[in-house]
Length: 170
Image 1 (cartoon, rainbow, N blue to C red):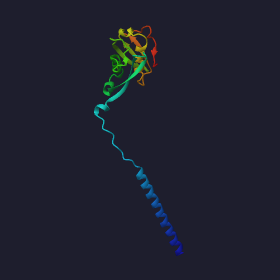
Image 2: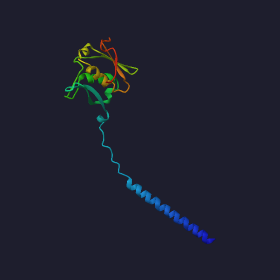
Image 3: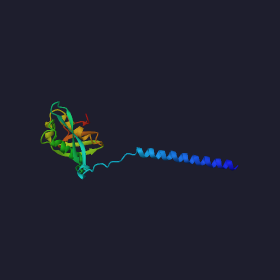
Image 4: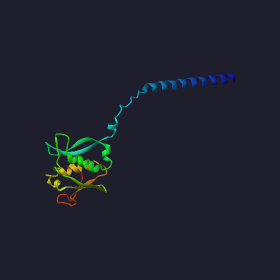
């Protein structure tokens, strides 16, 4: 009987030693797989306030609508984001390869969002645009906002021929 107890104790001791060795080896292997974490470079306060927006203008060569990415101060988008972005669009591109299809002198009378449609009321100068690039410059830019599905244009509060529909991204 004593032999059975001694053999059982020896088996338990050997089992504990084997388990301890396996756990120790596993811990060592995991330590080797740990990589040193490098801190991110510090971002200035100005960079944290920046956001990228897409403005659409007319390509000088092809005449098609092309995107210009621009960084703007996020604070500028808080109070009246649609009007702010529309003003940037009317001011024109910063890239030399692009033209502004929106006629010079166009002014914003009002901008309102209702049920996914952005109602944009502009001055009569907007009617001097040739083709539809001025319309789609605004539509493509404003539908970058996820809450805007289409744009409805009026001129001094009135619907004009060619602007009767709700325009959506082309």
